[in-house]
Length: 426
Image (cartoon, rainbow, N blue to C red):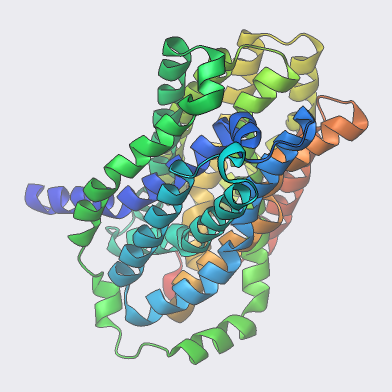
């Protein structure tokens, strides 16, 4: 039975490791929430649709760097330690957020503005490629016996705190500033706030201790050995990518895309859409640790199967119900239902992903699978949804995109097998 001081030490370890995870998701959410204003500032195309599309494509471009970051930074972390890798990713993320927050608009410096914004997004994506994997693996390796699902769930739960914080800032700004001021400079305020908390996050993360499991390993693979092991285990990485597709598509659908969907597609107020996003973040924060803990008792696979099937059969019908008579209560009801499915699935999925990866390439393998899913599918969810609605005229079509992602998750849940040395509840 852990002593009170041991529990306090564990809690602070979770807070420290999740601090950078908060910054990574906060920055991504702010970009998604204010995509229209960012598009007008940096990508004036003379057409609102194409300006928004360019903004969302830049949002998605950051995810294209994630696989590269996963390989390079993941190999660095598997060789030099979890702590060293997590400090490096926080530093790179900080450069990215500063570059976007302080960038002059297209009207001031011309093409240099969108170019530098794109570079900033690519740098953020590169660092984020390892961040999720590094945090998840760290939490898995410090977890107390029988509670790995609960511990690892805080990786994603910390992201929900960022979702809520970003949405709350948006609600307050919408109440304080008229739309024209928000479009001109108000959208920069959340990014500048993110810059201000960087020193606090560095102070928290620099005090991290290395995990006992990493320190206890007698041999750490070289970078070339890690890369060879990843190539040998490509089937596991592919299955992991399919597992994550369900998570990343549903997450960006119900968070980053909700404000734009609510205001631009459903014609609801921007403030109302941000309030819904705030509620979604709170809902996610509830379901993730609850279902992560439940997976420690009943197993990961049953939860994965149940909630991929639920998403597969309900996503499109609930979206149809919403668009037939758009309203704030309907949007909230649909988003909370999708949040329940996402949080319940992801609470079990993240720890399951650590368990199917070979221990010597656990960080790089996890990060690569997560990054590929995000780069190919999840990160472009706002852009894909916007484009599909534009070409089909069907405002409920994002529900079909969610169903596709659920199909990927269902197939992977059936195929995946945990590693013998790290079998958890399956």
